[in-house]
Structure formats: C-alpha cells, structure tokens
Length: 348
Ligand code: AR6
Image (tube, rainbow, N blue to C red; front, top):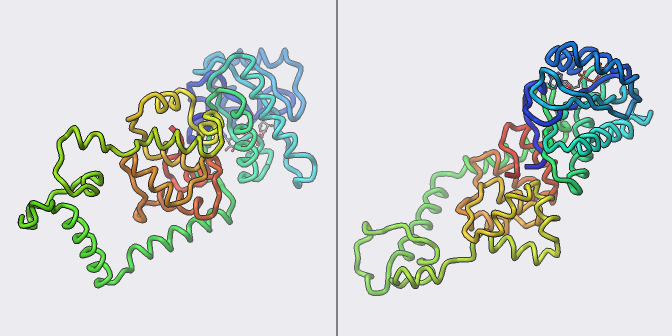
C-alpha cells in the first residue's frame, strides 16, 4: 500500500527516512522533534548545527545516527494563526520538499508525523487532509511507500461532520439488521431454503430426500445437471483478475492509473495481472472497486469473484457502503475514516 496511516512512535519506524517536525533553527525542541533528537543521540544536533537553519515551508536532510532509519528530514511547518496567513501553502510545501529530498536520497520508504498539528496548532483534521492530499499527489508520479504516523489516536481527528455522518449510517444499518421482526426473519430463511433446495435437485434426482442437500457452487446451480469435473471446469466463471482487467479496459483508465488510485503497489498489481486465479484480500478487492468507481451492486459482484461479500454486521463493510452510496471514491479519504473507526485500511 503506497500510502498508509499507522499508529506508532515515529522514532521506532524502520524506514529509509523519517521526517521531523522541526523549527527554523533546526536545533531541537519539544514534541516529535525532542523525541527524535533524544533517540538519535547528540551527533544529530551536531550535524544540524552545521545546516544554518531552514525556512518555514522547507526541509533539510541529515543522517539518523542511533535511529533505526537512514535519514532524518527536518521539515519546518507553519505556525497556525487563523488559516489566512498562507499556512496551508507552507504546509504543502513542507511535505513536497521532504518528499523530493527523500527521492533524491533514493528512499523507498518514508514516515511523516502530522507536521504542525501539535505545538504549532494547525487543526488536526485539516493537517491530516493536507498530508494525505499532498502525499497521494506525489505518489501518482513516484514509486514510494509513505507512512503517516499518528502518535496519539485520541488526538487523531477526521472532520466532525464526516465522523458523525458515518456513525449515524452505521447505527442505521445495525438497526436495520437487528429490528426485523420474527416473521420477517422466518420469511427470509424460508425463501433462502427454497432457493437452496431448488438448486440442489437434479432432474433425475427429484425424489431424493431434502436432508441429502449439499451446498453447491453457483456454476452448478445454473446448470442443475450433474456434470463431469472437466465440464464443470470449462464453465468456471470469470475470475477476479479477469473481471478487474476487463473493468479497467472499460473504464478507459490505464493499469497504472487504476492501481495508483486504488493505493495498490505496482508489484501486487503485476501479480494479479499475471495470475488469472489470484486470490486477493477483501480490502484489495474493495480498493479496486473504489478506484473503478463501481456501483454497490458491481462492487458486490467483484467481491463475489474473490469469495467475499458485504455484510451489515461488519463496521468495515458499512463504512465502505457509506462511501459508495455517497459517490465518494477517494480511497485516501475512505482510509482516513476506516482508521478513525479502527478498521483495516484499503490497499494491499
Ligand atoms: N511520533 C509520531 N508523532 C509524534 C511523536 C512521535 N514520537 N511525538 C509527537 N507526535 P509537534 P509541530 C505528533 O508539536 O506542531 C517543536 O518544539 C504530535 O501528536 O511535535 O510541527 C519543534 O521544535 C503531533 O500530531 O510539532 C517546533 O518548535 C505531531 O507529531 C514545534 O514543536 C506534530 O506535533 C513544531 O510544532
């Protein structure tokens, strides 16, 4: 997954480079800056002294000394005043400069804290949005794995409105699922049993007793005839990989546009492309469905190809449904929300 949100102490991240939320003196301070200097040891400060400071909105790179990474990129974020003093522009520039420095240093993995969102007072939901938008734009053109490291989950905020909309949507769906009266549930069960029963009876076995019922694959359901294994194999449905490639063609996107929009890395996509019977994880399937902007029904079809379904007794599924129903196909925004609700993220 090229962009990931994780909960951790950034000084523990085993990546090529970590980014420090520094001040323009580059001589250390509180917050994450203090943590990084303490963990790296005094040699880091000695190297920083030679850099002659750094402007707000820019960044400089040093070694990492005792840290488990190779480089520290010291980025100087803006102090929040009221949002009308160019704060956003400077914060974007911080992320861009840091990513360019990481690229020049041939880093494949980079971890960012939420720059400016602590002592500098940038509202956390807006700081997160800037981070995600700027990093995902960079990843459209560059192969890198970038982590946004959230230190304190309590301090993590998606917008209040989005959070409460999703919460309400989850509540409604759980309510739906659990307020069917007894007769409605029996009706559904009976309907289901009839389908299964019908599906299992072959014409020449019509007199078999119902307790001989076995669950059959949809392919067999369609034929209602006993068939040899060879014949059955010939009727195998379009696989997940085949459906994905067909949908990409139909969408007019290139493969790269699609896997990038899905937040899936190139290597994983090549595996799926070259293996017709590739078995993806559920978040991977959904990531592609989102990138392809499939409707809810098409998403369910694609999930079925990989042996999955969406259920109303699962928060992850309801959140996905919420975004699809609202026509919001931004995988990064969806991941923000999934993270806020402690669910696994979309992508690999
Ligand atoms: N790992 C990851 N994130 C962390 C960690 C950690 N170990 N510690 C804190 N954070 P801040 P700023 C998060 O205040 O707002 C310093 O004095 C924290 O929860 O460190 O850019 C500098 O020298 C918050 O979300 O940086 C500057 O003077 C985020 O890191 C000034 O603070 C950034 O919070 C910079 O302020």
